[in-house]
Image 1 (cartoon, rainbow, N blue to C red):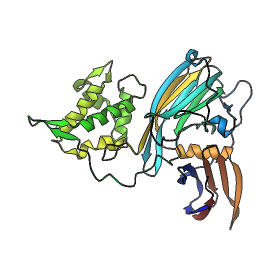
Image 2: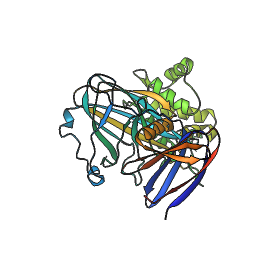
Image 3: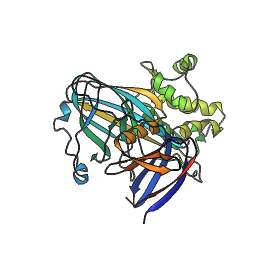
Image 4: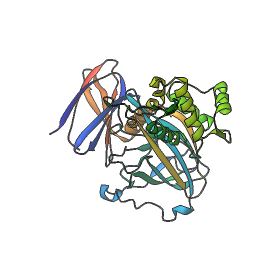
Length: 371
């Protein structure tokens, strides 16, 4: 039986995303803008563009047969990042990929924690051109994969998830994990579960994977809790906590949190800011964030990838993608063809964007079959 969804939509564009998981269709609504221009590849020298070469059937796509046999000889770069649930939307780290020459590339992205029962689905989108580096159903274990040809140039990459599996929690666990213990000598110490969580957080924040936190990486962490690291704050970190090559060590990061605990005399209200800002609930389970890893291999040149901060317009990028690739279907309303439906299908998801050209609040009823 088809299911029906009714909602109100103001002028603009939104995404309704459906994904089948264990026989249940889940959905996510988002509001965003509309881009009318579909990107077109330009032959010969010109701007960078994406050519998708994976066009097998759904069955063959699940068997990753596009992986280069000589991958160990290709140039490789790895970066980490994280998707965060922020209010009713999802934000993510964004990246700039530079390729000095045209080359064949092999790209994978996967959740940082592997072997999970229900991994988060992740795609990369080139938000500048509205094109997508789309992973479809190409899978290598939990990795979403793509092999394609890219021209020389810069690509602004934005990790994206539908929000079917990564979404706002409905409630906190009944039992709260203690963050501090009292030693036999009466000193405040971090509890073992909290120390383990801080180790995980450090690994997530270490975006370049060098085992240290640079000022930029530490600042992105502080921004998650509403604080920015100015020169004075970073100087305090340098003078009081273990550093190596001008960057904060894991031991220094843990000791910083211990000093916070002792400075607050064991009051854990302030201590909860750190795990909460990283998507952890009161049981120290990370249910409102998804750390991920991106690997890019280039056959002919050395790829460079720079992290560009946290970006909150994932929904804008997806509206551009869907409206450029989806077939427009005008819907009739009182004013005529002023509501346009765009639907983009892959082997694993259906994404629909609705453009509302009416400067008024509309009520739209959607029916969709089980997929």
